[in-house]
Length: 577
Image (cartoon, rainbow, N blue to C red):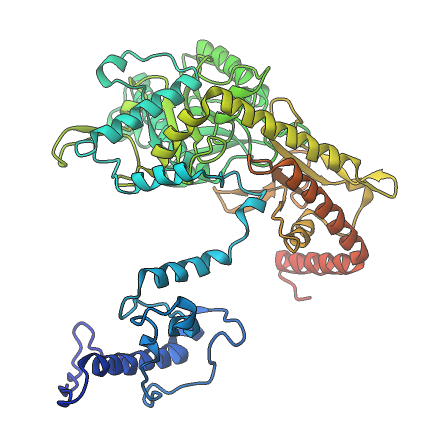
């Protein structure tokens, strides 16, 4: 048992070890299998008694024998653990199919098909990704696309010396992204053969890199302006201006990189920051303004041109150099294919960098992202690292290092496969389906009154996203979070949440908008390429059925919400209920 193990510095005597030799007629494999089974039985008993109760595992009834077993008296060892593994029987006829997985390193291996079956069992318990309208991540792949992804699994894209062809693919794809975002060709293009930027792990890494570049750029400018040395300028606390509708990666930037967030709370009727609010918030310590092209709540686009004009006036007036980073995690591969969208990319001079998720509407595989800077000088050069120990000289922009090239390969494949025409058709289809869902929600009534308030911007300056809330004037006993729970029983996952902001500076909860309560709720439907018109029709029918159920049991939800409110109040006032 584990009690016999000697820890570092232990004075406990080493237990005697009796060498067991098989008899002349014993089969060696059988003998050692029995020994392994005896050890495994002891480990299961130890796990049942000491480990499992402390780890909080939630076991289904009947999934494992819950009868207490004593580590000192293990059950008789058998050969069941090996049954079927070596005989070639199917997985479901082998002992593996009736064994509970324990959370430690396995003693012996298993056939490849058995290992794959184990992995598949975990994945089967996931939600159906095709019916998940909460996530922006692409879930549709052609077979050729999967083949390309497998090619990338063998390539460490960080090692440019060993994989020069693959890294050329990276640069070619980067140039396509920069071209799509109308980046002017930098002075260094002839030397490097590509724009200033990098393929990254999702837009999160792109945002973090862009934030660091802005911080280091501001630090150099501030030190020169005030004649400060390196140590003195590090005492200054920089800030960044951003809407409260930011994605989680920016909270990481604020926490990890010592950047003070200055939040702009939008109006609940627009979901976007205003140029006037930005102008009032900027000061000498502002490293940049983040404009979001498609916030993840309602999909609306921040007015990049208007913010840029306000910054231009401030910079000229005060001698500042405040620029814009465009967080185009979702909109970077949608806005270029929408008509009548005002300039938002590098056509706007104040835009210094743009990041985007290739795995969202760029329809690459999960973990693909991009960041592009206007130029290397005083921007990307601040986060570039030179690597020579792999046998050559290479420039690395990313926060991490070794990683597979699968996402880059798939992104390049998708650009070749679709082209501008294909992405245009995808965008048109998704926007059309969003209109279908939006109009379907608008038609739903409750006693003759519209059931929902539509919150998104419709078919203009917005992602293919439908966001709504229950009509507040109806004073219904249930909310959007309740709707999410009922819809999940109909196989649909629709994200419902409160209009609340988690402030990373003090971990407090407050209102997301300046004109709405933090307790108000809303829901969102992300229309991805796999959400066809037929599926959208079923979603609307499921919403109608879910609302009918909510109306039938409305009194129960009223009681549940009242109890929740009393509990929250008791916690706030520290009084028992």
